[in-house]
Length: 300
Image 1 (spheres, rainbow, N blue to C red):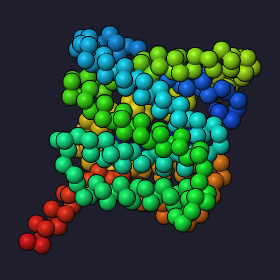
Image 2: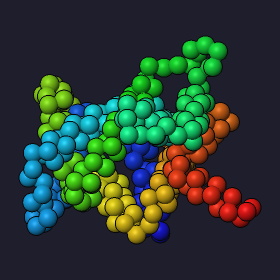
Image 3: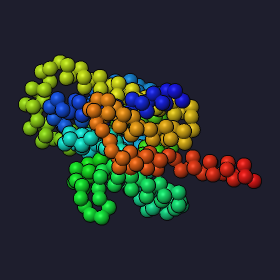
Image 4: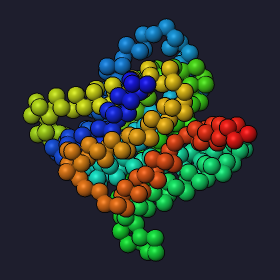
């Protein structure tokens, strides 16, 4: 449980610290590519594991490549919001609207049974986004098209979760999934940023002259990008999915806390109310079911 908490504590640093690096002038194309690439280099030994033989099937390779494509666009939309000046905490909270996207996707799945609790949580999420984003309910005052970046990122997180669950059922382990996710994301990023990598080369060359910038990016990729993933994979094996899911809901809270410390960001009552709604809506529905069943058993 302690290791799981540490992983969530570190996850909260992803957006506040990425703003520090992006504000130094590194092009987004190189930031995304190096962020994923550095992580992959340190996961390369995973490919020498014997149990990687099952990844040779065409179906799994197809799913892994699809996960990589999703991951590449996820990196772009996630950090694009930070690059254009959005508050790191706001980006994190909006990205945590992914349970609503999962519900929407599941509505097209005939095997999925509609659950009223899921609907309530989704409504809480949507209302929470309106509050944290300062969108006026009676008009479009305060709406910014920039909000589409984290919203699209949250939809891609939902797609990543669904695809990852399918791969886990096919026998792909957590560590393998993490390494292959980064590998296929690199290929996709090279395609997405094909023109930008050439155009942004002079800017990156100027940026990379400072060795502290390079060391900072390496440290960020490993200690804030890779380490919490590995800690989460390791610790989540020893706890229930409900506990792991509930613990992850505190990532936006820590992101807001770090934004306050690093960027001196202040949050008004609307943001706090919306944030609480989104965090509450992200608690796994099974948690509420078990609590309700225990309450009925106690009253009976």
